[in-house]
Image (tube, rainbow over the protein chains, first blue to last red):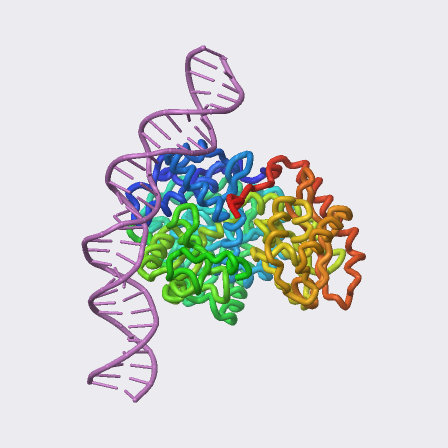
Length: 284
Length: 284
DNA sequence: GAAGGCGTTCCGCAGGGCGGAACGCGGCCC
DNA sequence: GGGCCGCGTTCCGCCCTGCGGAACGCCTTC
């Protein structure tokens, strides 16, 4: 509760927010698209248990259709029907724990994240890229009441976060996409100009370090470093603190060292390598 | 494997029966059933990246169909196509992190699990029930080389584990189901007799404690206690160790206390209450 | 008693998912 | 080299299956 309220409780991006949105002229299998839209409805906005009617409102799907879908998903364990409504089912958690991108990176990174935390006692993050968004895999935080907008399993646009820019800098295709979409101002400091963002990415590419100076959320600054395998960032680490202690810079070496350590651990373990998903959506 | 042999299950079509199981005469939406079977193929057996051909073998689905399904799931982010094959996608992890059964229980339990670990330095588990299986939500383990068969996000039959029996004892419907299915012997000590299991559950109901004495795995014993809300177990905690140090019993009070502590924390936080999913499959 | 919101069921229409067949490719073995 | 096998991918016409408007029974609210 202490967390996300003032961060704007972001309803991700303006393109997808109106109650009807997507799911219509899409490629792929219609039923699947709808089913996943349904599931996504649980990850957006507040609350975790919803009535059929509310899901109908959120997704814009007709009630009989939803009824059928929910019943099917319930049997499959992806959704659970409780007296209070529907919620995401345990089997989703099971499946999620078997996602290799998460599993292996996290495992390799955890000791280094711990070290970073010990050294700084500030919030430490591990994230990966998905499309032009960042997904947080892990967070270690202490008792300091920093209101980080992040959450494990949460998603934020890459262009306005430390880890995000580090990831973009070493993922050309994703960077292209990000540079081709509108950059909404989340704070007065958000980079909203494509030219500026491009330069920032170049700088990051040169230094191997990425800074977020209240670009996503007022009161939050951080340093991040990419975890590079074959010159591509498969993940990124960061330390976050509040700007009174503006000297995030002094953490830069530690963050960079942690990223390198993780890289080495991974290089030693086979199996994580083919890190780049093509992620079908190159159509957009 | 243990299940369907006696049912005859003849009338269904050929092609999908043998190398795989289910997915044929099922209720629900066919495409969804297939898609989820496809995803499940990634959580069974070794390896996390599979070729289309291999998935075809595992699921028994025709290749063109799989091709179409995988492409659709790729766009949705539930699956990722890499040069080496397909793997589960990051969005599954995202969804999994939003599962309330997991999210809230884990959050409430974590400090108590830590305490248990500090006190014992043996492996600590947190699990919930799904059907007649147990799903592990969290595990804290030290450096002792105990080969626990568990894994976070893993699944085991309830009747042969400490947490499982604790959960069954306080979930009548699930217990009924478990008592109606064949109990395979996983070790010489596994309870395979329904009568014996029923008595064991009664004992657990009286004492509030459940023991696993190498019933699931040789070399593994544990004590477990249910986390009770309104006389139903919404989860269970356990401490596991190897039988040379047979005195798991001395951990019993600590485990029980932890369970009570978690219960109290949850009772104070609203929102976790409606814990019983009906989980569609009451058909069986 | 009317009005609105909810979850649920029914059923006839047609659009979408199906999968056998066929193709191009690369590795392997004579 | 030629033949073979297994792989991923594309095509296309048949037919099955998912679709959703309409209608119902049950609540609470005014």
